[in-house]
Image: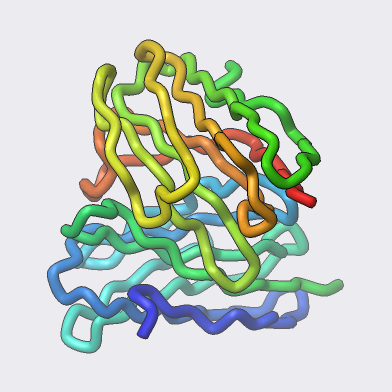
Length: 110
Length: 116
C-alpha cells in the first residue's frame, strides 16, 4: 500500500462548480499535512497546510480526519486557472521527512 | 527574487556518462533537497541536506551522490547514468528540515533528464 494515496482523476468540472479531493495516508504517526499545486511541466508550489481544526483560504478548504486517516481539499467556485495537479503530502517520521502522493488532476472547463 | 535556481533545464545523456545537476537558493535556507518525479510514482526524495555540512540519503539514493558546497548550493551527481534515471529532477529548499506544519518547500523549475 502506498503511504499517501490519491485518485489520479482527471476530475472534469465546469467553471463555478465545487469539487473535492480526498487523500489517504497510511502512517498514523504523521503529524503534518499539506496540499501542493503543480501546473503542467512546472514545479510544485505550496497551496496550503492542513491543520487538525481544518483551515480555509479563500475558495479553498482543507480538512483532516485522523480517525479515518484522510485529508481533503474542497475548491468552491472553480476557475479555469484552478486546472492543475494537486499533490497531497504527509510527513513521515521515518528517514524520509515528506511523502508525496502521485497527484489528482483537475480540469476546469468554460 | 530568484528563489531556487537549478541548471540545466534539459539534458540528454548516453548510458554510462556522468553529469552534475546544480542548485542554488538565495533565501538563506538551511535545508535543501533533491527529488525525482516519475509518472505514477510521485515525488521521491533522493538526498537531502538538513544544514550546511550534512547530507543524508532519502528514499532512492542509489546511483547518485550529492555535495552541499555551501549554504546556498546543493549539487546532485550521476556518476554513471542509466536509463532508469530518466526522470524530472527537482531541487527544493526550506528554512529548516521539512516536516513541521509551518515548513514550506520551495522548488526549482526542474531538470528534464533523458538517459539513452
